Length: 183
Image (cartoon, rainbow, N blue to C red; front, top):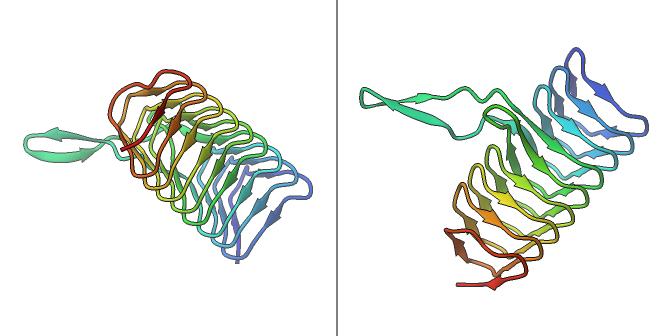
């Protein structure tokens, strides 16, 4: 019960579990595992050894709207989402495609269950993002950052390399490298 659309490529030794969907021209590297009901949107890219737990959605539309004459109109999300090598994504996570370019999850980064990554977000290499974190659009997170459970990051901010964000912390402005914040 899997759907693999035209032009998609799937690397050697990759396992695609029941009910999964791989969109047109998506590229999936070798030795990946796509858990049941995984969705990889059109043109999205997974590197080597990427693991997706059940129900992960890569490349859904980002949350973008313009208000015109008092009505909210959808802004087309024309970019992609890309996960580099050795990324692991927990059950029920959503990683939105970018508006124009790409949403990027860096090599070796691990996302726990129920994490949401907004459009145009860049997460660096070897980060740990714990359950129920929400990262708003166009935020840039450095390498080796740790984000505790239920933290929320506002859009268009920068988090420096090695920063640590405690659980349930609301981050509304840029964070310097190596800083530890909570609350």
